[in-house]
Amino acid sequence: MNKIIVIFASLSLGLGAGCAGGLKLDSNSLFKKKADESSAASPEAEVAAAGASDKPTATPPADPAAERRAYYQPLIDDVDKLQQQLPACCQSEDFLLELTSPYPSHEFVKQYKSAWSHKSMRKAEDLETPEWKAVEAKYAELDEALAAAVRLPKDVYKAKDAKQLKRIFSDYAASHTKKPVVDVVLLYDDWGRKSGSEWHGDQLVNYDQGFMRGFVVVKGDSGKGEVWEFTPRKDFLDGGKVKFDVYVPAEVTDIALSSVAAK
Image (cartoon, rainbow, N blue to C red; front, side, top):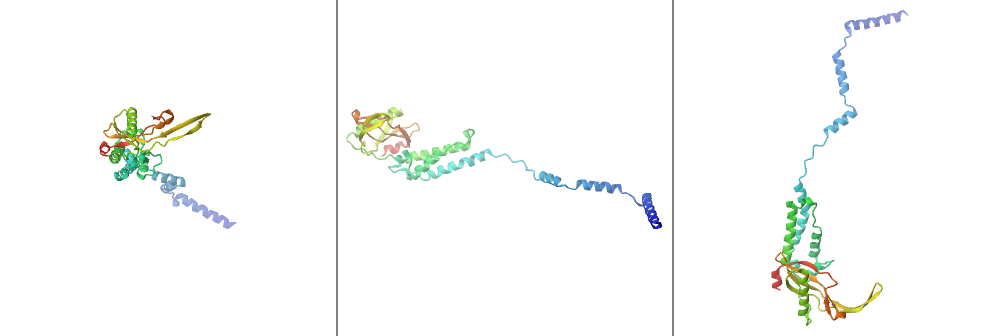
């Protein structure tokens, strides 16, 4: 019991002495510790800090002209490749026939039709831009070079009425195009006459007819010639009259008038 009292007394004296002046509280240290605790990074704070430091900088504005050039350059490249094949590619007699074919086998014709099918404006706002005008100019160059390179095939039809038949083609072409005719080339050696009958709905129709195909060159507005394709039929049930009532005339391509005159 006495030991417990002594110990308690000693502790009291020590605490009392500390309170009297031996144990001094450092208020500055307390404030510093509090500040250190509050500034210690919590996970949320670290994420926020990282997010703030990684915030993307403002993206510089795109260059519209550069975008247009990148978009239209493949079209120009395709035309350049085609121009490199001229004029050797298209001076054969069957070249114009290939141009009229829906499924051409001629490699240049396939590439040419593909280039034209892919020629399109990205958006209407590009119409007056230098980049789209460059595309238009490049395609105009191609067609100018093509017109200078193409040649008409030879006449095939040699029957005694060939001259009269050419006149029929010429008159119809002049009426259809409203332009002067320069030349006519007949492409079949005969009419390929066929006769028979077939049902059209509930009606049996008799036929006796043949077809002729020809190219007609008329003077174009650009100073070149225009090659048109006509395919009339001869109706033997109507006295052998030549009628342009089945196939729609089609403009094939331009041609240099000098090459028509020299053939």
